[in-house]
Image (cartoon, rainbow, N blue to C red; front, top):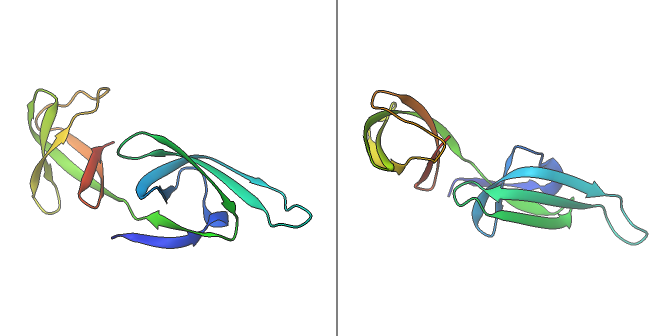
Length: 124
């Protein structure tokens, strides 16, 4: 698995974190001051990169969490069939099929950028 451990205080909006064994992108991060008998707490709101579900996490700022290492790659559209597109990776020349997002309009020969983590892929 491509992931590393970080303290919650090192996280920031726009970065990634593993929640419920799913890579998520952070869209809100806030901290609360330490109380009389406790340490500062952080609240992290994130959305799943591949499934789109919202998740939240509330932990002390010195707690450790897993951060996925998501690769950003380049590809070229080979063909489009309905809602799927056949993509060729521009580094390895490997071809695979991906679902086209609703807001995208792809044509053969288009170059795209996609995210990859543990065999899961998503067009950005």
